[in-house]
Length: 135
Ligand SMILES: [Zn+2]
Image (cartoon, rainbow, N blue to C red; front, top):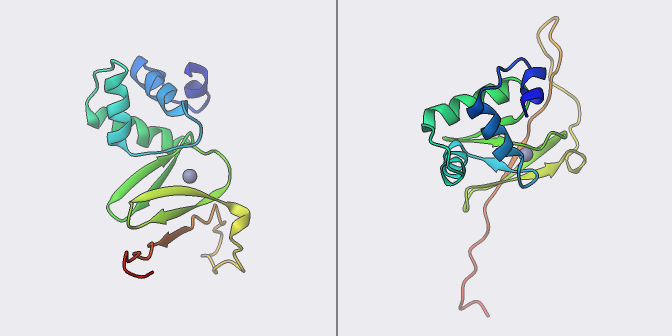
């Protein structure tokens, strides 16, 4: 973890190394700062929520995780591959959507000299309510 942090220009403090280690457990995940804070607490780390949030934003700026803002909520996605997201509005759940499942036809006209970095698409859905008397 230390090398991974150093490679992206982040000073590897004990707290940052431990948080990155926790993030990397369990494969691709979408973590809210509060969730990582709880996992850190359960692992015996005593950090403030602000410290966790600052570390996550630092990791996102360095490209170690991707920050995904949906309305008022923020997730940090650990999937390093090119992908979009599906958002279940009822469950407030974010999941990965493989890049090839969406086809972007054309790109918008960008300002002179600008280059497209990435298109982040969030597909929102709501499950229809099932009525117990419908059958
Ligand atoms: Zn993701």
